[in-house]
Image 1 (spheres, one colour):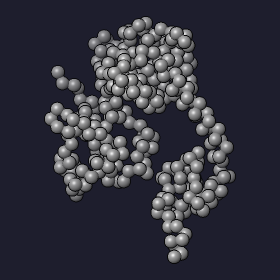
Image 2 (tube, rainbow, N blue to C red; image 1 turned 180 degrees about the horizontal axis):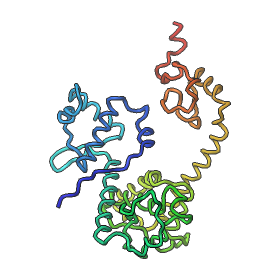
Image 3 (spheres, one colour; image 1 turned 180 degrees about the vertical axis):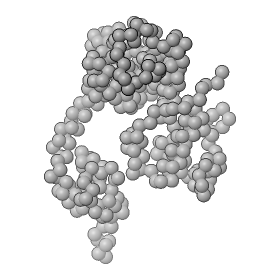
Image 4 (cartoon, rainbow, N blue to C red; image 1 turned 90 degrees about the vertical axis):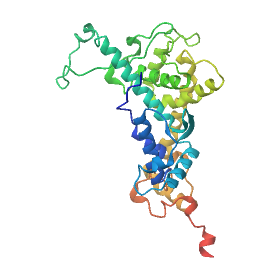
Length: 323
């Protein structure tokens, strides 16, 4: 039985702009986005066929496409893999989002077969007038069949659904998506038992992360390197969120240090002095954010000149300019 076609995937514009803004040319961005879109449309990696891909762009030679793909692979944006019928192009982030979308579809189908939520869960809830009664509500809670199951009450935010941008279940799902990708374990879920050292359950740890401001996207980025190393050593996937506690704690500590530095340096009155250092010696410490040559520079636009926006490599040294 073939997999159902995925019609919708999540898109995070801030992450996309941060990842490619000021780093990819217009040609590379266009080809990169087309490759991502084709992967979403096909439901997986696409053939490494420069000629076929070039036909999707007007007035574009296949050599241009091939050179762009090589650059994107070198930068780590794309990867070449060996498929059943030859080389293919893949984007790991696209694979993650496709898996998340398939999980949503599967859970929606299962809930539909069960008749949706039991009536006792909905009778006591007052629905706002703005939402019709026939609107589908999908249960996004993870599958729980390992050790003691994590109940819905354990993963709901303590102050109600409206008090947080995400729930503990969202954070657990973000880790699960990486485990599914690396170990092919769609039924993975963290243990509901308290950890021996911290005496806290996975749901309680996830709730702490929600209160600390950890998002599913950031948690996925934090845990992926550690999980990749485990998989490369042929070890089992962690069974408790306590395994990632130190990673998250270090990230939060770094946030506090960064916030302290930014509070000291990122005052509006200091922009003229910072720009003066940039114009004189091309000095721009990292706490100030992207330098003036970057499109995402935080300096007020009216203070920037055309000379400020030139990358460091394009600035002509004084000796050569006066020679």
